[in-house]
Length: 244
Image (cartoon, rainbow, N blue to C red; front, top):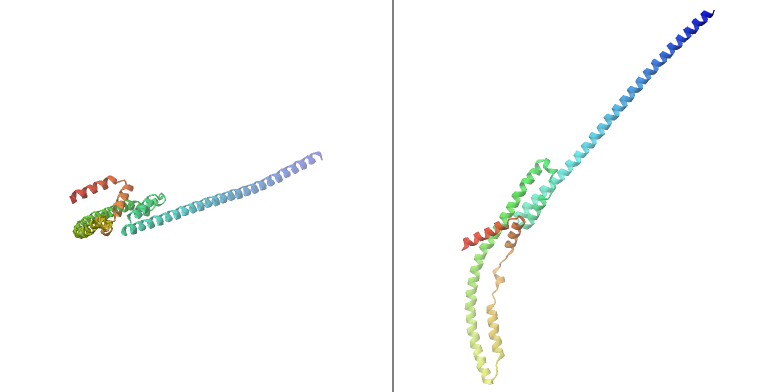
């Protein structure tokens, strides 16, 4: 009976061990399932995180592209404005616009062909401004030759008119002087008349010659801002040598 009791205890112990092993196996399965789900969740989270980063990166690129496009529009608008100002002869205003173009932050634009085109366009516009100012200056020098002829003609006409007036004034002054001597006093009217005639004849109506010195200022200012003052001086000296 004692041996049977021990056998039953042994059997029960084995059954308990088997039961525990079964339960441990079930727990291992649950643990593996939980671990698999955690790994999947972590993987999904990482995928979601990468997706968020990609979206953020795409948004940043979109903002950069938008800024670049805005810079392109600004640069092209200024180039068009400079072209119109040059065509209308407003060289100083055009120069101001082109210098503004040079000051643009084209680092974003440089990634596209528009930025490269604008950078190449700036020196072309500056050269056109310089040439336009020189052409206007040359026209001014040519107009001076016409004005010089006008001055000579006007001087001849006024000299002739002055001689006629002086002759008449002298005759009239002589008559008043004779009367004054007869009255034994100086006639101020005769003196004033002679002085007025001389002042009127000495006055040369330069305002009628139509001289505008604006081309000199504009050409000088353009070359000054471009750092080419010596080139302008040499051009002027060359023009003077040609005229003489």
